[in-house]
Amino acid sequence: MNFFELFDLAPSFDLDLSQLTTRYRALQRQYHPDQLQQAQSNSDQAVLAQLQQSAKVNTAYDTLRIAAKRAVYLLELKKQAISLEQSIGDIDFLQSALEVREQLDEVDSPEALEGLRSEINQWIQALSNEFRIDYAEEDWAEARDTCRKLAFMQKILNDIDSAEDQFDDLEDF
Image (cartoon, rainbow, N blue to C red; front, top):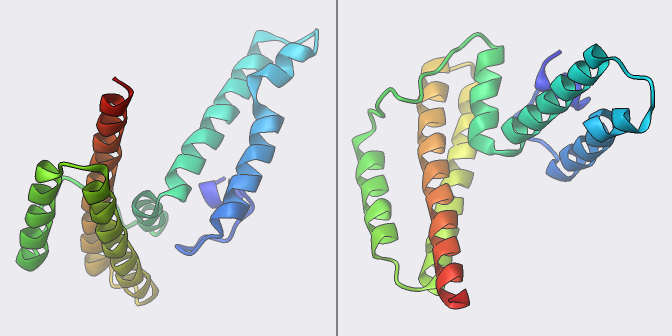
């Protein structure tokens, strides 16, 4: 059973994230290990199976809720394995990404960070649109390249989250 089937969703880049979250919560209630502990007579094997299913639900949810991971997973389902470590050949993208990375290094306020987050979200939206086209046309080379770009931008978004946490820590201090 693939991750889409687990959540009773059609394999697609476009997902209703609220539906995904609702289904995730229902599955977690069903498979959470605490559910087994409430029943008295459970074998170690049943507990292990419950733990494995709960872990699979968590992994599937984490994969499907993030556009970059979902794109990679869709390509894997189409037998189009991707190496995210392979370099991106688009020089213009790399130059722009380097500039964004420098902006992140120079951010000095939560407001500036929020502006950068907005910019990155726009990049992710544009790259998502590009991936939809590549995927629909089965242009696997372009789809893999777009996945690498999405993963790169997702990494910057994660770094923005970390920087935001640092600003929050400074405010709390």
